[in-house]
Length: 220
Image (cartoon, rainbow, N blue to C red; front, side, top):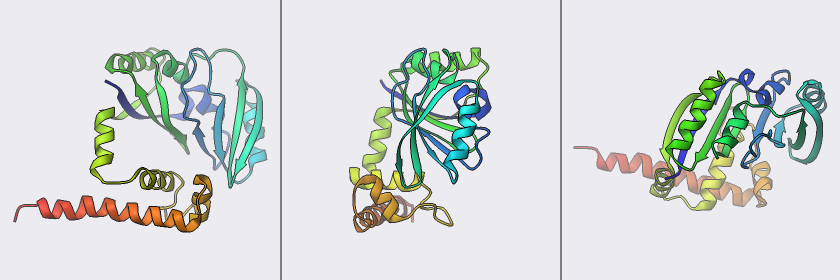
């Protein structure tokens, strides 16, 4: 049974995170791939006000051999990095335990959502972190079936769910908002109007399911 684990870890406790400690006001997201055993993550997205300053900070880190900007989408840039030598830290441990990175991002500390093939693989990863003195703070562990069923119970379409998750991750619901509907729509390849329809419809469905259903179920 596939297991999903969500946890946070300080940036200073693994090399990839440490690379960005000198990059101010920066958001980093890892590509959703399986880390190869013994290698570091080559692809990642960076959101910042001054890309050139961030690039200088990354290149100055002794663990970085080379850095290349591959693409830019709105205020996000996709990079490929080449690392000096093999690093036996957090990302190495994920690959060793056959983990898949479903989501990983950072502003200060790092948040990870990983999928493991079973509980034994999760235990292997956790033991790896303990042995290497990596402070992993587990926030949630659940099965893949529980994750899928929870999404189905909300009654969201796949398009609505994708739009809501993207809007949440990009700060659309923050005050002030950090992303516009046109920017979000561009990431999904749809119009601003279509993005608005998905977010409004998805939000209404979630609120209806969570709030109205809970009222109906409440004892009278």
